[in-house]
Length: 382
Image (cartoon, rainbow, N blue to C red; front, top):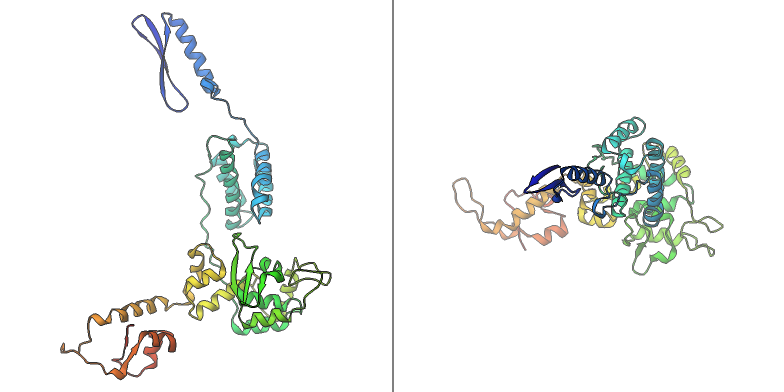
């Protein structure tokens, strides 16, 4: 910013808040030009120049309350997590305004908080905080989201605890009567605990052997096929005429908390380091170990992204080898095998197998190779 003279008149030179440069003619008086420039600087600093209104400096507590009432509670099933996170934010940031909470302040909060809870918990809190600031910008409360550059902690979220077959038998045997069908359904469907406890009879289609999960984590309806075990279990559950819920108490109210009964069953079965949610991991793990493809497992679990299902890939270590073998046998018609002297080897028809027959009878090319005693046998592509 400055004052300069051009001809007989004085001009002022300054920049608008949006970065645009502006020059304005004042007149022949330099004193007047200096006065106008000084006043212009004050107006720009107060964000009042050229109808640029000064943003209301809203407190974090007020914005957090608005966020809960307008966005979190109406739209999120896990709004209770936001309530807990906001309680910690309010204690740390006090009565600061949104503009006063910088990325540096948030980094300091992260370093203090991680000494009290796990990195994963801090990351969940950061997701909540960043969403609050994102909504504040969308709702016109702030001009810029100054904490958008804050990064989460790097954590290894690879916990994959599942039950072996003998552990499943022990657990089912010691479960009390009300809990046994709940655990069995979890093991055979991969449904989450709250999905099972919210299950109603109207959600079950016995004719088509389907369970419709309406209250999902992603708020998307999911269809789960029922195997014979699930059908038998649900048919044996006594229907309460006073309740629409499949699993409910005598007076008809659904079970809300089965943690205590499940923990006691684990102790009696001698199973440690296990949660109810790990029954879902057990369901997926045994599917993968039974050579069910990961895409199908993803659909059954209701995972929104394939990356979430990839945690089970290591349980099928030969899935890459089998994929390469299938490709090799599909391209095998391009050439025929040769002996050490370069002579073409004619394969006996009795040693040839169609690819579709291999898939149906043996489960894959690798399994067939192990079953046959002939080194020169091959699979004929379809």
